[in-house]
Image (cartoon, rainbow, N blue to C red; front, side, top):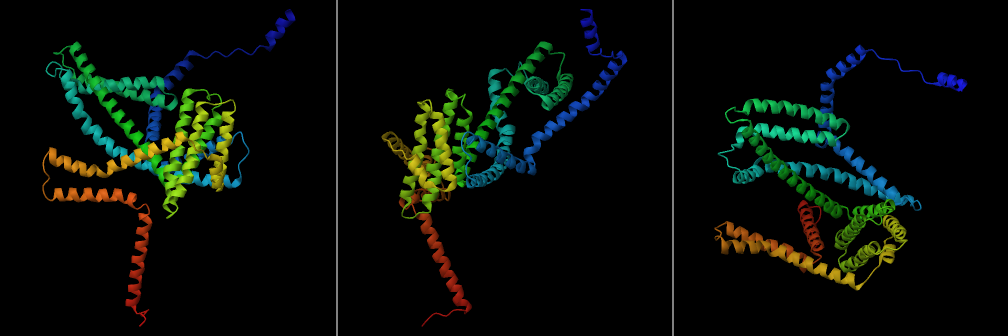
Length: 460
């Protein structure tokens, strides 16, 4: 027992050397002196990170990041299957490059376009609508909010910064601490400038609280408008990509579904997960039917209906997998992944005939749904075509007659708009016919120039 105690005493780690109190005080003083500079550096770094979307080099980094993300999704889509052929990988890289570059430019356009819309909305429109609302709720004679507007704004900013401190980490937390300290200084300055001892502390606190609620409504309305614009920008980006690159958009849509099904083995029975897969299947089918089929059919003069019917069958085959999601069997997830992987390989390899054989699906339900969709689309096109005429006629009957030349311009524009909307219905191949007319006019013009130059003479 004594040997064990002695051995234990010898094998124990050496005791930590006691640090003098002066060293602790020195470290604390150094930390306290350098703390403002540390917080300032974190604030500058965070601000620089927020300003990166406005720098030109950001979009190159964004495009490269998107391509890397798509490559990761590609690996996840084929994670549990055989490695696809090299030609499929090369075609996928082409898709990723085209989509990633276009997405970067769309982000730039939507960002600056959103700023052009949001800044006037934030500065001019929202205050003019919120001020009457506040005046209706608060008596301005008893509580003049303008006397404590600065204190209210900086108090609300301090509370937001204080909340962000607990919800952020790392550099962002240090940046928010710096902001909170700055807002404390501004709050003290606002109180010293706006506080009037004659009104009392209670009334001044009420003014600050009411002003804080006003600014909270102001910023909440601003964030709501910003979120709505961001949502519209996202929908615009998806539709533009599907219209500009329908083949790449189709490949990406199916690839995302395959990757989610591969990774979502644990979430397969989750209702939200299945709802997301259903939405992705519907979006992929819409891209095939509305973008890919239309672009191919626009190049076919007499066989456009055949092309649309073929890709309509493929789109219905994609939609039929919704039944796999809603009423799955034990092997449904694995079977679906295999079918989606086969779709990706056949699509990227150019074996589109295999898509028709694999995805061919015809039921009465889908035909009825397709018929109803066509009726809704036709009705929407008709309403869009007659909208200018209806607005012009309604304005003249209900408000006031349009004077000249505004009335003539409105009528001419309405008729021109109706003709432009009706032309694709009257002649689906109007683009090809217009191109042929341009070619004929160009040929005649070239012939005239040739005869004028004397290089060619007409035959007698």
